[in-house]
Image (cartoon, rainbow, N blue to C red; front, side):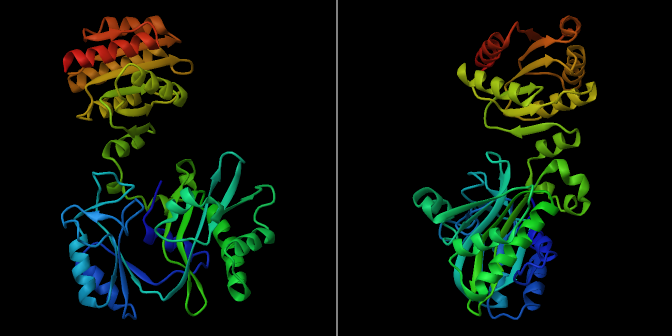
Amino acid sequence: MNIHEYQAKELLAKFGIGIPTGYPATSVAEAVEGAKKLPGPLYVVKAQIHAGGRGKGKFKELGADAKGGVRLAKSIEDVEKDAGEMLGNTLVTVQTGDAGKQVNRLYVTDGVDIAEEYYLSMLVDRASGRIAMIVSTEGGMDIEEVAHSTPEKITTITIDPATGFMPHHGREVAFALKLSGDLNKQAQKLSKQLYEAFTTLDCDMLEINPLVETKDGNLLVLDTKMSFDSNALYRHPDVEAMRDETEEDPMEVEASKYDLAYIKLDGDIGCMVNGAGLAMATMDIIKLNGSFPANFLDVGGGATTEKVTAAFKIILSDPAVKGILVNIFGGIMRCDTIAEGIVAAAKEVDLSVPLVVRLEGTNVQQGKDILANSGLPIVPADNLGDAAQKIVGEVKKAA
C-alpha cells in the first residue's frame, strides 16, 4: 500500500525526523489557509499523487509551457494561482504513463534554503534477505539518471536482521554522503531513526529524495515516499486508514475487498488462475501465441464460489477484455468450486466474450461436468498450450 507525501512525513515526524512545516489541502481555500500559517516568504506547492517525477511532470489541460506538479511560490497570491491550476487537473509524469493522474490533494510547505541535496532510501533486498540502505550524494530529480550513468555514486549498505541497526551502519551512511562534523552526527542519528520507522511500520520501501542540507547546517527530509507490506497492515490500523482509494485502479480496489491479487494490464485477454507462478506462465503463453494479457488475477489456493464469482465479474468489468482464459490447477482449490463460480458469474453478468477454461487436479471431472451442463458457450481445453491457442483464436475470430 502506498500513501501520500504529506502522510509519510506525518509518520516520520513521530520518530523525531526533521521535516519542513506543511499543510495538506483539498481546495484552493485550504491551500491559501495553510500558506498563511507558514512564515514565508517562499512556499512550495506540491501535487499529491502516488507517482514520482512530479516536478518534471506536465498537466494535460495546461499546455506544454505550464509548470509541473512541484512549484515554488513567492507569495500567497502565487499559492492561490498554483493551487487553482493544479487541483482537478491531470498530471502526467514518467511514472503515471500517458493517462496521468488527477490531482485531488495538495501539500503546501515552507520554503527551505538548500545548500546540498542527497538521496537516501531503504527497501527489502530480496537477494540478501536484508534491509538495504541506498545512499548517494547526487540527490534530486535526476537520481534515475545517476543510477543509470554513474552507479559508482550510489552506495548500498545492508543490515543483518539478526543484529538490527548498529552504530557502524550510521557511520557508513554519513561517510557515503561525505558529511563531517555535526552533519555527520545528524546523518548517523537520522539513519537510525529511519531504520526504526521502516521496521516498526512494516515498510516495503522508504525513499527520501532529496534529503537536504540547509544553509544553517541541518538535515531535513524535503520529499519522501513510503509503501507498506499489505500483509502487515492489520498491525497498523492508523496506517491502513491513510489509504487513498482514488489513487488506485477501481478494479484493483474491488479485488482487494475479496482478498484477490489483481493487477490491470494493457492487453485484451483476461486471465483467472490460482497461483502466481501459474499466472506468469499463463500470461507468457498468451504472448507466445500472439496476444497480450489484460490482467493478472490470482484467486489463491482457498477460494470460495463467492470469491471466484467476484473475480470473474472484475475481469468482465474491464471493457478492454475481448476474451477470458481460466487456467486452474486444483490442488487445495477444487475444480468443481471454480466451475460453480464461473457459471454463477457468467450467468449474472451475461457473458458476451469468448471463454476458454482449462481445469486440472482435484475434482476435475466434476468441474468439467458442471461447465458442460451449464448451457453456456464455454470452450474446454485439454492443456495450457491448447487453452492459449483456443482463446487467442476465438478473440481474433470475434474481432
